[in-house]
Image 1 (cartoon, rainbow, N blue to C red):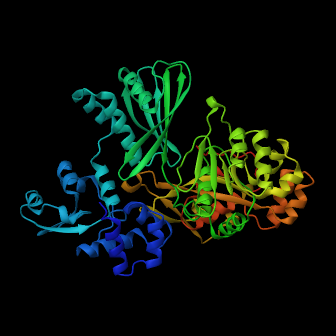
Image 2 (image 1 turned 30 degrees about the vertical axis):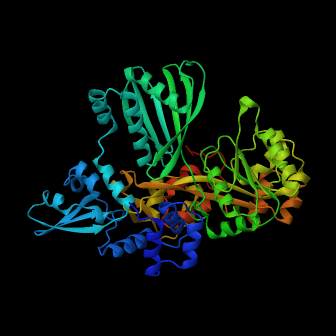
Image 3 (image 1 turned 135 degrees about the horizontal axis):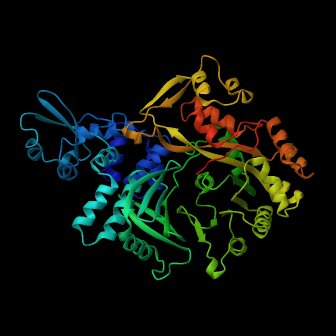
Length: 557
């Protein structure tokens, strides 16, 4: 539990961990302790380690970083779960005379109660951050199926409790999607974590109808409809944050399948570096968004992080002196200081009709969730041509392909050349767990990949160069990966590129000029991230083809 904003501010300023200016900026962008801290960390004004050290000093206690030094299940079980959660403590280590217990609330710890657990040892408190303590508490959790059994045996309110447990687990694993997949005799529950689906548990089929109805009621769907697709939404509170859940239901031959997309409420603290953008790319983007009008496109397949990148751009543009209006389907993130419109086909509020209305609302900056058809493309180009900065997403495999595809949709080459500022293509790769990664020779990694020699991966690395791999540990749930970032390709529309666009060029011609002007292929951006230890070569090859290699499979699921 963090102290209130005033107390945290006092602690950080007293020992000069941050400046008065940094604190004022964080206060202006926040509404509680968590968002104040998050601003400082995302803006790279403060690290979590320094924050923990500062708060520990304020309590007169040593600081222990439970992320760098994660606890084991044996450690956590040395204190009963009920006591641990009530007292906000976990076991860290013990010697012959002293036991060290970590807490985030030393002022509320009942030392006499804890002494009963360790009668022959002296109690020594150390401080850790609330999020690290909550991660440690997750080690108490039993598998979902075990908890399902306990709920079925002891509870009269089966459906609500099972739904609550599933959503709680999904949030703790930072899952982006929850799948309920009906099969003849069971229902499989799977989570998508860091882009990969993993089975979380199985639910007895006879209880699924109640769970299904519970989700339908919470998300505003019709419970008497079983043969058509439905969409809905649920809002939950998780800790100090709101979490939006977007629910999709489709009938299958085995029953109604549910997928719940987990969405964060606010991403207004995102920076370019947070999403994986290197300095050379950040400079191009900053140059582009500084222009008063024009069009910025992010392209890639579904699930490649395009919308997140757009919101990072909006965050940089979101100042009190501009009017930002968005039209999206759905509104995935809520951002303060913007006007967000949800597409609603039932009332005929489409992208095209909504965009026509937005242009009459005196906007400076417009975000269109996706350019899907010719009408939306034409209105978007006209908006960018008439003094607005317009941001949108578009489905194409790479940046160079986006321009011919827009021309195929009926956009005149001279209009496209006049309005387009940059095209950002991207894919998502999983990031290595920093707790269990280790160094390995690049030559060994290339040999193990069994990539055909004509692709010449070895030219990207020296014979003595090392890269990183990971073993898997408790911090990453034994996957070896924790989180994701994007690999980018950015084509800036220079005067030379504008001139080329007037002649309706092919994808290869656009790509050739972009390379001559210094544009970096996505694969090379991925290689740079492999070198810096963010991800693996196999992970980059999973989602990006080598330059000049066509038809590679892109797996952005």
